[in-house]
Image 1 (cartoon, rainbow, N blue to C red):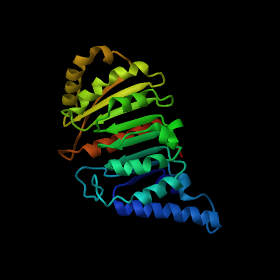
Image 2: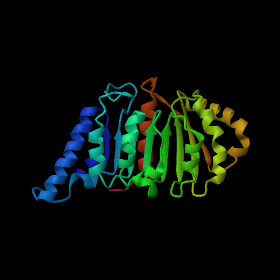
Image 3: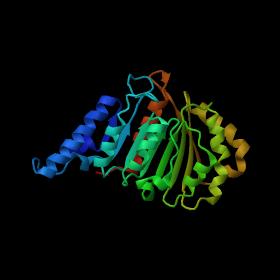
Length: 255
């Protein structure tokens, strides 16, 4: 049962972060001291979502909130050395700057947003293994996008927008010419959400008409999704469900 319980973990409030970090630490110390036989719980953890999984559910992990227990997240990173997929959602820029260099070297799939801090690959332990990055509802400067798409290990860069009327979508199209310098990148996804996926698709089509030349690059993939859950738009829920699908698609059987 333990691998099933701990392979993919969703932590959506501060007390759960503290409890999970404490469990990882206690398990590791118990194995090291000989108090417990078998592998530590940390060996089972492959995918972690930290932050709100819904825009409507009650939680204390608001953007900029003092409730974020950053030290305990650091402990999770320290003990979970087999982690492959990590999502840090609603984490303020200053907190990300404190954690960026601590992300485990094993991480291959990283999801951040909204308005996350800069992703500086040269300062990250996981830079040699990172295959996919998803940036949620975030404006990224040109230099950062260029640095990411030319990274030799990165295969997929995903720009996820919770609403089709975000001005940031146009910025994402503006930055597509940087793909000309990308050699290892296989996909540049622009994902657009609306209450109706067809509305999102129409909006993507309208915007892409002004960028026909760069959109002819086969690596550019436009994706439309619905952001409607329980009769109301929910951006975090859309991102969370997308994250779960990505794990099932790319990391199935990773135990």
